[in-house]
Amino acid sequence: MTTSYKPQKNVVVERQNHTIVEMVRNMLKDAKLHLAFNAKVVRTTIYLLNRAPTKALKGITPKQVWSRVKSSISHIQVFGCMTYMHIPKEQRTKLEDMSLRCILLKYTSD
Image (tube, rainbow, N blue to C red; front, side):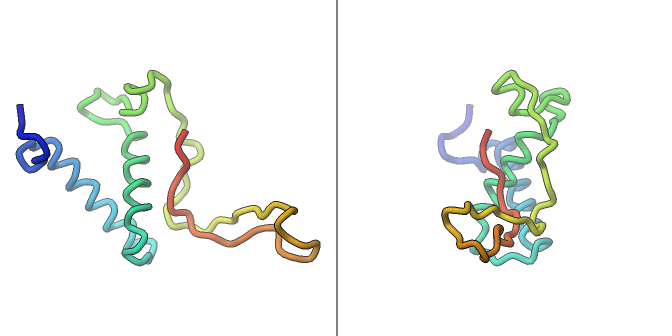
């Protein structure tokens, strides 16, 4: 039993929070992004941690335990890498670019 809304009293939760903060800090620094992107990076960090096997779950991912379906990680790309977003033909003229250059910040939920 732990005190409600006091993660510092729960060692496991405190360690997980520390891990998330460290990952966010490192991902922002590695991608050379401004701190304004921290919310998106936190979501990406949690997305990745939910798809990584853990020792506590004997090598199974948290997402797999929750959904009982083995998730694929084939779509995972390097965080902060350059990517392109398609612009639908209804939103552009014939001679305009068909894509917009972007930086990968997060993944969409399954």
